[in-house]
Image 1: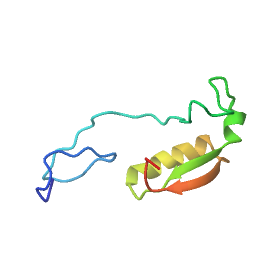
Image 2: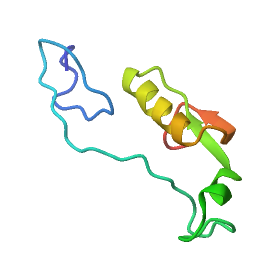
Image 3: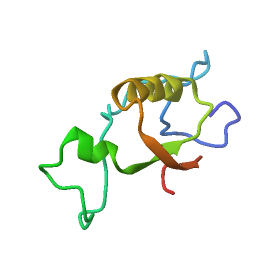
Length: 90
């Protein structure tokens, strides 16, 4: 926007700049996601069963992502991270 190469941008984090208007579009809660064919996770899985699984972690230098990571770390303190990646789509 600042460099006039786009008219509209959707991003995960707010942009602080006097030359643009930034407003929330949608709030997304942290959500546990797995395949509907996962062999061990069901609608009735316990916290202990979920914690026995391996997790993926997003690598990002965005300021707000750090806050979200800290919140997740508090709730799932000893989770096993088997993959770290910089893309939400990996």
